[in-house]
Length: 340
Image 1: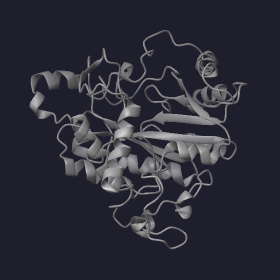
Image 2: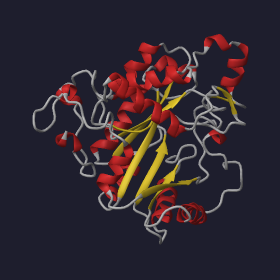
Image 3: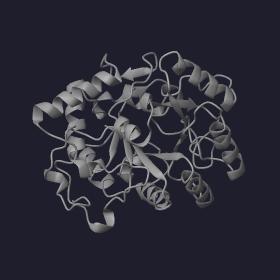
């Protein structure tokens, strides 16, 4: 795997052990940028009966969006509340509305555009848009609109991929295939839109080598960012029922085991990708397991320490990519690898 100067990326140790999403934002914006989480009231085809009911077996949306059951305020009101909270902490901040809860491209084009435009029209230093969604819920018409929008402002579409194994996706009732994820990611990137992927490490039935092969497969795709999440058993989910009936069928990592896994995963990951985070923490009152007793930032610090202990870095053990799998660099992205 070589960069534009012909250097072998696998054998070059960069100054930092992995490409941090904060560095990506710093390279693209001359000011601090914060996401403002938006709940636009979307549902999911895996819940409303279009594909299934009940959702993914691990999913209780309240686990990552605790306000989702409350009366949904307008997008403008949510922007105001989010920005007000940041104004108390930082000066000179710019904002990225983050459409997070459920499937934020699941609707007719006119309604979707109206929601996105309302967020972008907020008068206080909005510099772009981040949209979380499923890979089976993005139309060509919407991608064309987002492509046009991306020429004027920052646009990042994050897809819940979760696993590259169809047997796992079927087991957790995901109701889409990995092939659909690949198609959505490629169609999005081909239009010049930045693309992210979410992965859950430790889904039932996946051995460690299965998890590490996810890194090999994802590395072939034209991704900009990746988010890693440890599997969490959440109250009120089908997976909680499965866990209570057969806890031994789940391989929940200890904190140290998970830190090692993150480094192993990053070592096999395309060094062009920006890693946005290594872990997530659902509210304690909703989480059945695991209970690590640390915050996300502490997990990241432990991962950094483990990189240093190994003398390792992202992409160290990445497999060479075929030319057709090489990631093209978006005009939004600084080619910091050339500096390394």
